[in-house]
Length: 227
Image (cartoon, rainbow, N blue to C red; front, side, top):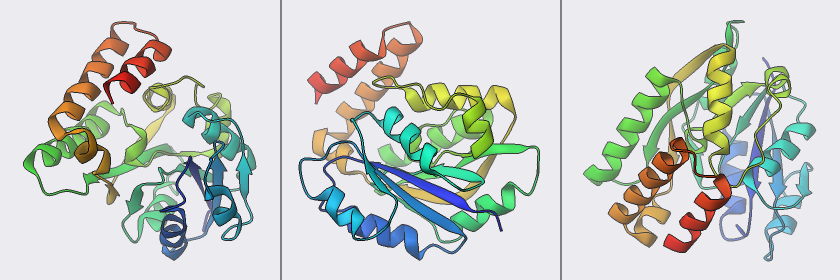
């Protein structure tokens, strides 16, 4: 089976990093784990080093960190996984099965925000509709791509926000994408910390402003100030 390189960008995640790495390690399938630390000020880097050999430090910025991780990848496919996301058992195997079809260049999973509220259930549902029918996915949906295609596309744009949106658009223009029904569970902590409706409004505002041409740097400032 094809080797899947799981790239995990992290920053100050000492309280959850071991749990994350143990989770990924427990998944069935041929895989390697790559942790890219963005200059954590806590013990994230040392904890990760004790778990996997492929750990590196670089400057922070999710797009940049994922590009650095991709350079270390040896797999046929790269899966970019947020540190607060959890994959359903069988997810790695599902990637390996999907890319048996040579027309498939990448794809993503079915998002489930880890919360039973109807509002976050609606967000999960609409996110999945967008990914399935419009072929546009965000990072919390577990974007995966053939390593060669990733290189040919020039990797993630190293911008402050919306790097996953831009890369997803490039993928959709390049070839056929697989929407896998396997669940990827994302923590609801940010939604609860800042308020569900406030966060929903903020995320949609940022997307709209980006479409209207507001720069990622300005959007990042809006995002930080609102939180």
